[in-house]
Length: 180
Ligand SMILES: [Zn+2]
Ligand SMILES: [Zn+2]
Ligand SMILES: [Zn+2]
Image (cartoon, rainbow, N blue to C red):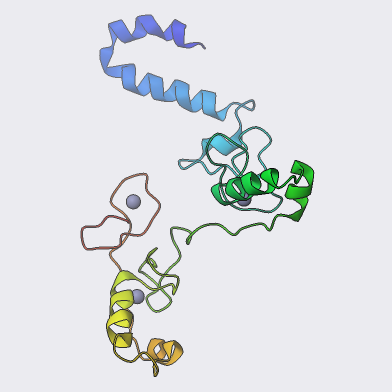
């Protein structure tokens, strides 16, 4: 069955058009020649994909390529300096230190609230509410603050559920029901 053979059907039964198109799409996506990677609702291209390479050329660097080159922004800058100093590309690539992914993955939970996402504004892995309380608490106690002790005394807040955007897999981070 091809898309063309269904066209007359649409004119006779306009109500079927949406359903038929969906059936064609489902059949095409289900075909063995279709890359299973793209069958998911949210497509995550893994590092090292043979066709869609997005990662920095420095081995094990987890950051994305930048500025139309095959290096992340940090390594691109380092490479510029190294090249001016006479370093070869091969020397640079074998000596450069790989970098970890920037920030947290979207859905890392707050270390106190299992149902609330950690804020990207802090590396302490705290939701926005706990991040604010920690900042307020530590404000005038510069010398005597003990994060572990403070964290042990906190109670979890209720989460705001899943993000209301239909295809979004993240947790909402406010009562509006939207992720960050
Ligand atoms: Zn890099
Ligand atoms: Zn929290
Ligand atoms: Zn979202």
